[in-house]
Image (tube, rainbow, N blue to C red; front, side):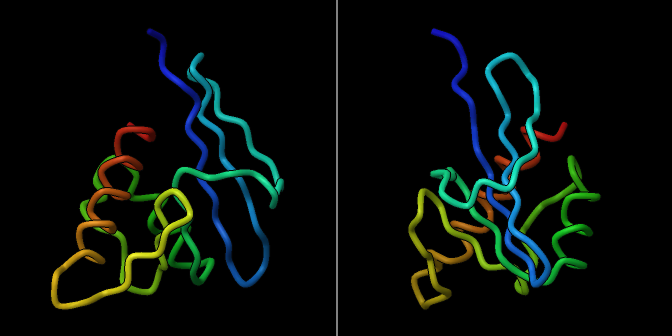
Length: 98
C-alpha cells in the first residue's frame, strides 16, 4: 500500500495556508481554506515560521500555537492530552520535513 497524502493547515494573523505532502513526495502550497487538514496550526506568524525553520529538530509545538488533530481540539488539562497532541503534531511535522 502506498503512502497517502498528508495535509497541514496554518493560520496566522496574516493568512491561511495549506501544505499538502503528496504520496510522490511533492509539497503543494495553497490557500484552500475549505480543505480537510490532518493537522492545523494556528498562532502568531513569527512563531509558526520559527517552528517550521526548526524542522527536523522540532521536539514540541510552542505554547503560543494552537494545535488541532483531524479537526479536534486538545486543550491543556490535568490529563495531559494537550501535551500529547502537541508532541504528536511535532513528531509528524518532523517526519514530513526531514
